[in-house]
Amino acid sequence: MLTTDEKFMQEALQEAKKAADLQEVPIGAVLVYKNEIIARAHNLRETTQRATTHAELLVIEQGCEILQSWRLEHTTLYVTLEPCPMCAGAILQSRIPRVVYGARDPKGGCVHSLYHLLNDARFNHACDVQEGVLAQEAGDLLSHFFQTLRAKRKQQKTKGNA
Image (cartoon, rainbow, N blue to C red; front, side):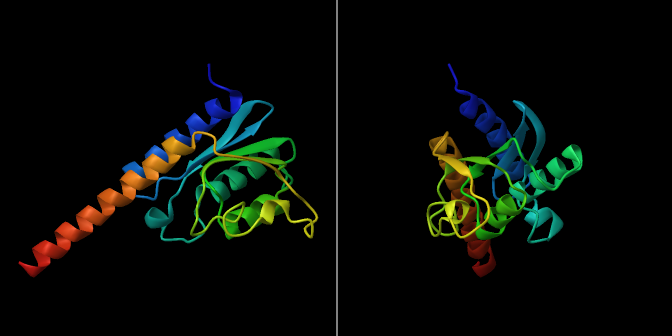
């Protein structure tokens, strides 16, 4: 039997798979309000060629529009990878009270890995954070994506030298 967090993280993973299908880094997010998904998105940086089209920022934008408020109180953000500094900042600014993420990001994560932005007492908002929900699935999706990408680049490089 899946927990509520696992159920919603599975939805975020479905979004991450959509990103992978577009040759985007497979990160997905959903925003939940009153136990209902009100927004869902996946990374679109390569598609849009805009640095800010991370899954988290896209669901925050949708959530603000749907709730008609920049304050996303009473919501939970589910994201497959630990948020980066830009996304952590947006989470704080939008007052999301709870964040659930899958895999840690040792090179860019700013919730637990590099910094602890969502729980820094110097800010005027902090989040309840749950890490590691379906972390293996999220990590495997990312690992497979980057292994495939490296193999394609190696193959193209080999063809170019032939």
